Image 1 (cartoon, rainbow, N blue to C red):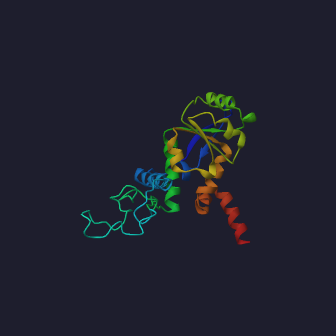
Image 2 (image 1 turned 45 degrees about the horizontal axis):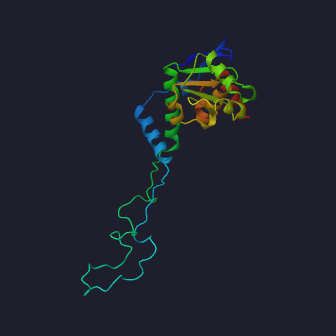
Image 3 (image 1 turned 30 degrees about the horizontal axis):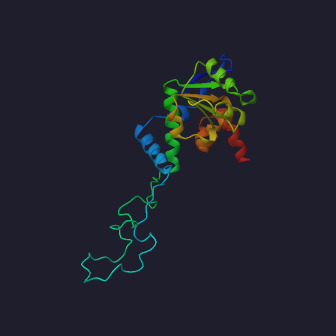
Length: 232
């Protein structure tokens, strides 16, 4: 069911009402799908830094330390054995481990739409007509969020990369700015409130909806005109 939301200016004054696209903000939420995609993204982002050398990687050990018999000492074939100080490590962590978990693009997009729908269902989406911060000042972002009655755990979604807006939130630990085309389920679920520029809505639809679904949301008259143009 289409959901209407109010559009505010940066002073916190209501400007108008708009209807959110149900194909983006009214998707049935499946927590299992979201969980699988989030785990996959977090695993794929994991850096494999821990690495130890086994006996084949350690330098040295080219000759037998002493003859096999007659010395009264234990038998050894190399001083790079894990039994020796300075030798290789047995069963240690290596960079050969691959933590990546693959999910297909369609599933990732579905999880993102579910995450956006969840924020919409809980009324944690605020839309602003435009978002501009003079000279990228932090106090400008703080004032805007205060006008919208938001203070923490806020994800600001803009239509395109904007250096001033990004810089204005750099010193706010609970606020992050992201371009609409870079949205992902992990970032959306990390924050409780979403503040969207009105122009970002069309970018989300264009980026994460197929052409067929975008066309389904158009008015009947617009669909008919598009069909005639295609036929010509």
